[in-house]
Image (tube, rainbow, N blue to C red; front, side, top):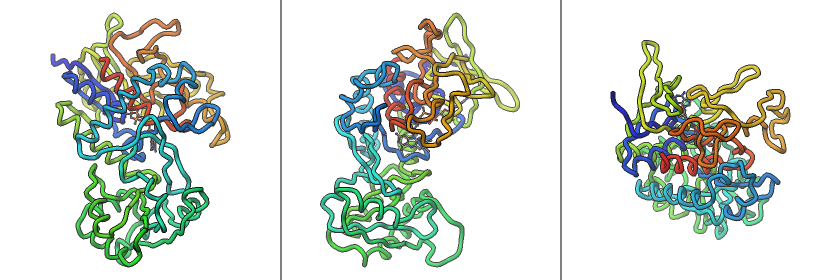
Amino acid sequence: MKEYDVIVIGAGLTGLVAAAAAAKRGKKVMLMAKGTGAVAFGSGTVDLLGYLPDKSIVNDFYSAVAKLPPTHPYARLGTEKVAAAAQFFLDVCKTEGFEYTGSLEKNSFLPTAAGTLKPTGLIPKTMDSSVIAAAERVLVVGFEKLKDYYPQVVAKGLSRIAGYDKQYDMINIDIRQGEPGRDFNALDVARWMDTPDGRSQFVSQLKGAVKPGTVVLVPPVLGSKPSYAVRDELEGALQCKIVELLGMPPGVTGYRLRSLFMNYIKKIGVAVAEQVNITGSIVENAIGRGVVVSTMARERIFYAKSFVLATGGFFGGGLVSGPGTASEPIFKLPLAGDMNQDNWGDLKLFAQNGQPFAQIGIRVDNNLQPVDENGRLILENVFVAGRNLPGYDYCLEKSGNGVAMASGYHAGMSV
Ligand SMILES: Cc1cc2nc3c(=O)[nH]c(=O)nc-3n(C[C@H](O)[C@H](O)[C@H](O)COP(=O)(O)OP(=O)(O)OC[C@H]3O[C@@H](n4cnc5c(N)ncnc54)[C@H](O)[C@@H]3O)c2cc1C
């Protein structure tokens, strides 16, 4: 019987960071997942904490955490562990040649494709918008047939914001040079930018429109790989700064972050099994022994000394709901939050206080281990992380990848 030190279930940012941290400690790690996780199509920024429950904007993470309820994942972990996780994350990105920037001391407010600003914490350097402050003119680049992206919306929205009130010009790049074909998304354009021909067409169509002192805004299309080579080449050829906007999914920048972490964990020895559906577990005397993988043909058990449950809550598949119920299907762990389904939804999509179901997660203690309603540990060797945790609403407070990174790191360091 082959036994791993750790099985991490889930390949979203939580699982990837947990696997990386555990493997760095010399553990024999297996990461198993049925899908890519949200990181693959999000924007790849690490939102630490954008808003407090009273809706005030967060500038400094450290002072904001003190104002969170004690059941919030950050309050359970404490700022020291979040800071250590952020440092680990930044180090991995740097090691892989795709350095991130940002810190817990100060949020960045990034321009979006909707012409608004969004608070976030750690960002790829292609999104560093601080250069806009000094720009004389901003050129918003669009692409013919690119879905969900309109340069006019970007220019109109940003020009109303203090610090962004500049001269805005727009230009549309034609990837197909007039040839007919389907609409495309940002990942299609990024793959076109991966090719020398794509980059040379981009430069030749843009060159006449870029004057000295111009900052160029593009959707997230500067290559599909975790590398700054495309941006550097284009900035050199056009002699200007280029900034990627936060866009609609697929975010491409998130796809790059996922590739970066996947490459890294494989390099440091993590075994990766993708497209595997874990349907149950083997538990003996309050200790998890193995997880069950079901295929059409048979069931197989994978054994480990410890487990990280990073299966992504309702969205990722880690929690499932049916009429009148919600449950965690692998270890059958109890949930925390309002279990009365009548209270789960607010009919207003963008409800002021968020959607109540978003606060539901697996009941944990401050070590992020599963406990019963009396606080007694249920499984000694299982850690819960990421969107499986209760007590926070990442959409409302902008903390999705931040909680994923911090709790994933904690789990990886604790197993
Ligand atoms: C469209 C979108 C955009 C976002 N953009 C941002 C952003 O820009 N910045 C930010 O900070 N946050 C963003 N977020 C939020 C953030 O992505 C999530 O909060 C965070 O990724 C949660 O990560 P996770 O790893 O816990 O879960 P997930 O990313 O959902 O990953 C869960 C993993 O578990 C696997 N899994 C589940 N059940 C099983 C099973 N039974 N067997 C095997 N595998 C299983 C899934 O396949 C998946 O690999 C975004 C979210 C979405 C949906």
